[in-house]
Amino acid sequence: MMLAAQSIAGFLEGIIGESLAEQGVQYVLAAMIHAVLLVHAFALSPAVFIWLERKVSGRIQDRLGPTRVGGLFGWLQSLADGIKLVQKEDLCPPAADSMLFRSAPYVVCIASFAAFAVLPFSSGWVAVTADCGLFIILAVLSLEVFGIIMAGYSSGSKWSLFGGMREAAQMVSYEIPLAICALVPVIAAGSLNLGEIGGMQRGGMQNWFIFHDPFTFIAFFVYFVVATASCKRAPFDLAEAESELVGGFHTEYSGIRWSFFFMGEYASMFAVCGIASILFLGGWNTGIAPLDDALYAARNSAAPGGFAISGYLANVIGAFIFVLKGSAGVFVQIWLRWTLPRLRIDQVMTTCLKYLIPISCFLFLGATLWPLLLASSTDRSSWTSEPLGTRFAAEVQESTEQLSTANQRQALAVGEDVQ
Image (cartoon, rainbow, N blue to C red; front, side):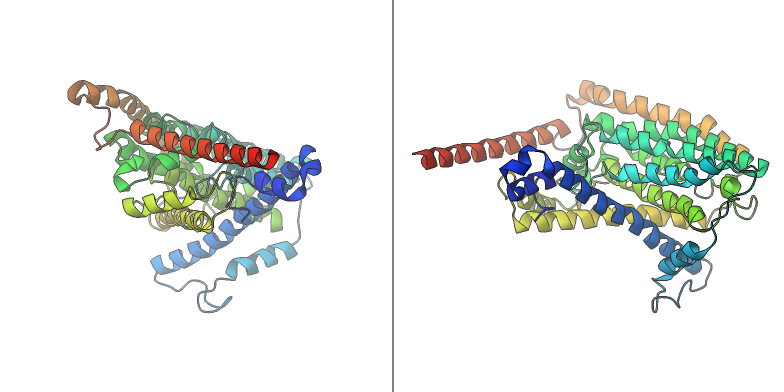
């Protein structure tokens, strides 16, 4: 019931009473609940994807992968590895800066965790609803580079320092085409609110932004390549390749602190794939028009601030679709790692600076001029049957009318009680 309400704070306000609600207790409790839910999502995704990487790599290399721990499929292997890493000794080199060395893994994890706070898993299922949600996610994900620099600089090893500087240069460079490609569907949507962008793509797969115009179609694939490199994944991981550099910036780390870097990496993989799902692949929408319309009607069946079991189930289905799309993106990233050879660090930088940045700028310019060219030649701004703005305006008007009707009913009920 809590997750089905318009907000957790609104749900709690009707339980704790007016005296506590006036003191803002419901917002404190809502923040704690959001934090617990996000921590579980943040911690569970690396465990699942580490197991998935081992199974996928095993199948690609014609072997089984984990089979012993957790039954037939070895699904408890990640948990066993976590227990093993907790038991290992946490070492700090004598020449290292102890404070920076110990805090660097937490900076990496916090940057990845913060992205989940504004990532909507379904319609209304988001910890922080922000009109500039995409900007916030890209901003907090870029903070991970500070943890990388701190780890390499504070290790007291030139080997780790060189690895950290290489990794920082790669991440900072690839953030530019990442942000530009993410703005291409934003131009079509006219909003930075990820919830609104996901809702605009309801009504069939043809309404997904990947099919909005040729520039968004190409931007999806460029975004995916750039996001893979931004997450330090192969074939763009020479700065920390275990067979060449023995870990790069995290060479001196051991035990649980070493695992924090990989928790942040796998969580960031799901975050960028989740962003791709919302921006290009319909978010929590199935792509089947009758089913999407039915789920949309179920979500709006409850009165404002109320609860309806149909709306809750619709959001559960939406969250499942969103997680499935994000996990499919992570699967492709894993597939690429065990298929393609690594690039040299100069090839990694050349690919970004010489090719991906100009391509992303061209796509951004093309997406800007596309509605103008289409309108001048066909008197329409979209090649779909109905322009995006018309569909979204109708949804906003429908929601406004429902809210107005509910407020009028509530006012009439209060008037009857007074009489």
